[in-house]
Amino acid sequence: MIDTPFRSWRLAVIIAALPFTTALPAFAQDMAKPTTEMQTVLDKLGALEAKPFSTLSVPAARTQASPADAAKAVQWDKRISSNPDAQVTTKDIMIPSAEGGLAARVYIPGGDGPFPVVVYYHGGGWVVADINVYDGAPRALALGANAIIVSVEYRHAPEHKFPAAHDDAWTAYKWVVENIHGMNGNANKIAVAGESAGGNLAANVALMAKKEKTKEPVYQLLVYPVAGNDMETASYKENANAKPLGKADMEWFVKNTVSSMDDTKDPRINLNGRSDLAGVAPATIILAQIDPLRSDGETYASKLKEAGVAVNTKTYNGVTHEFFGMGKVMPEAKQALDLAVADLTAAFAKAK
Image (cartoon, rainbow, N blue to C red):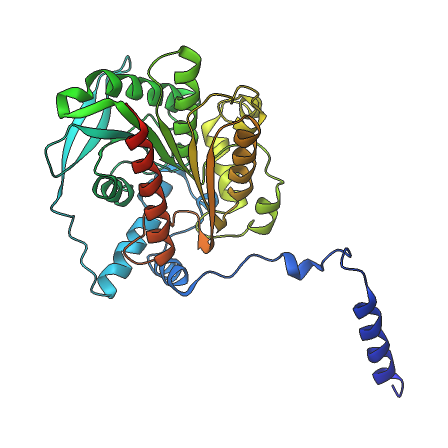
């Protein structure tokens, strides 16, 4: 034991002499720490007894408390008003479809119009959640961008496997293009937007419009989109145990969504494997640091840029998947919303 100090000193000298290219130790790759505000929401979600999706049946997953519920509870605790903004009115409609109709909620800002339009697709892994859960983001976008937001429902898995949701997303977009003038909207200034699985749907709609040579969106807002089928990326490894979305949860969503794992190779799911991105609408891609899907979005942004598409990408540190609609309790969410509004507004101003 007498030589222990010497051994410690010698080890310190050796470490100090290592080149900067030496691999970092495992602990340096650990998941990032949430901000104080993000942790407050996560703690509240735990207090509401929300469980990891991977441990639940589909019915239980659909009925448990959501991150949106947790954010609203934090608003209540902090005595922050949760009343909807009076300048935005809503109207629930039914979009015709071959399967009997798709529910949608139209958010209409105050003023005379005609207004630009955003077709918005909610998240939930194509399995859970609905337009009621995802109310905060479309409402805030309607107010901020002074635009009509059409928040679209779509069929969910496992009752309706892939590509049912993708088919519904396209059906809804086409209907909005053809009919939004009846609600004082301007289809010449139309964008698509979505979060998570909905971000994937929005990206697919933009690509489908280009392929079909029909009315294309002037912009796409993709918030932590599902864009690949590789679950061994850096962010999946780093955030395997993240809440409210970890690797096992994504595996659960995929298992419930596809009929076969071969479906994950389909270019509608594996956007990062596509070679037809050139000419698609410019995009803003908003990502969260503590999110298995971060690498998906980073790669898709790079692929779009390589194809000559204008992309504005921003990763917000210290926040998790689902942070985007929490602007009333989280500064990063407000910053992300402001970025989205600025980019959408600029795109609408350029459109004719």
